[in-house]
Length: 592
Image 1 (cartoon, rainbow, N blue to C red):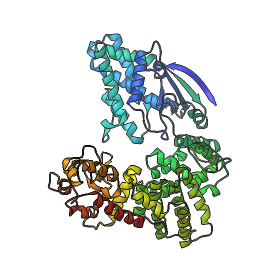
Image 2: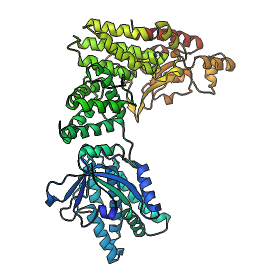
Image 3: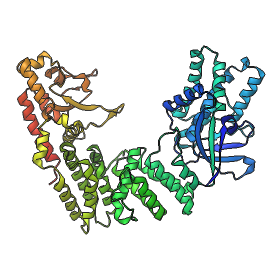
Image 4: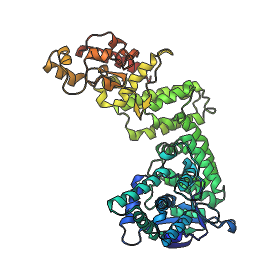
């Protein structure tokens, strides 16, 4: 399993006259260390008494042509090696800027450092990151900037990506060290150079990818924590080689195709793997003590599945991920269908737990005689279910996985409209009644669930839009919605005198505010509502931006049409509007 395991100082690992090159395979994650890891590495090296231990790397000899030198694939440790060489590149760049100040021996050290980073014989970098996320292009660009004999390539947004930022951090850290310790920049760079080259790394060489991935799961010192998705991928790559079903690159290609369909979110990828097992459990090989996939048993489940029928499972995952990606609205479509819009509303209603059911229905649609209209109707039912569930809290979160799995089982021989009837009946059986739903809607909904409050208000506003009046209520700027909930009667303390007078005096106004401020009738949606704040009702109603556009209650939304014609706002008005809006919401999100 392990061919060798030895401890090496960095200057030996990257010997200037050696012939070894370290290459990161394409299936590895892109460079992911942040400033916190860079700072830790720099400080550990500077503060170490003697040689600092940098951890372990796992390599696999992939030499095919001895003329090319020894090619070692880095199966674990790519983050560490990439960061270390970026630090050494920063050292090299600072020393090269002061080359005229150095004595002959130190100049030789600088020359050797350059050869430790770029092999002299063919000007190849000692460490070659994978290409994902422009890692390789950015890395070569950094080496070129540092003054090394290598041709770099500028990719858009290069300065903002991690490899460039890491290099910039280490350059700044060296200069800061010089300033703090009141030494020259050359002395600071040489101090970091010496600390880095005497640091030690344990290099483990293994005989095969399968051996490497077994070790990889347990040896990830100082690295970013591995998610279940990473560990399942590693198991897939190891099993593919061990069973010789497909080579490692082919297995990685399939895995990457799946991730492309799912998008970049680890949470989505991990949820998909749970939902796939839960949806198709009846058709999959039996996994003992795994009636439902959870975060805690997910790795064990996929180890068992991949061990029994690797290619079939991988092929099915790839196909199912395409369906799941569509349900999850991974790609923003220029011309979405009505079905895609239904999926989008479900996503905005926080209906992700139901994707397990939708994925199963979509994959079985031919067998179940389901048209797009059927799937769309199911999506509407699920949206109504989650609006009700997220406000009332019933059924509880832990029961949702079982609910949708048993709904799949309950479909049985149903076809077409019958499937829709089964889903409706199952959701109705566990959902809050209209009376319970209405009771929450007329209460302090903003305190109960702000997200539900915003969603139902946005849906009521969107339903009344035409092509001429359409606006995007879900647009974001800097990860925040432009259109947000506005309290008509302000929610903050120190109610202005104009409001106190409108509500019947200081004492009464405080009671009214406390009782009514978070109710549905006192909420609406406006853009940039920080401009409204505690202003009087009339100021809020008539507010315009710098370009003369209405941003108050005369903003054109049908939701605000009544407010746009009012001259006052009292407790009775809030009560009346709450009743009207609650009735509209119950009607808008039916389960019957």
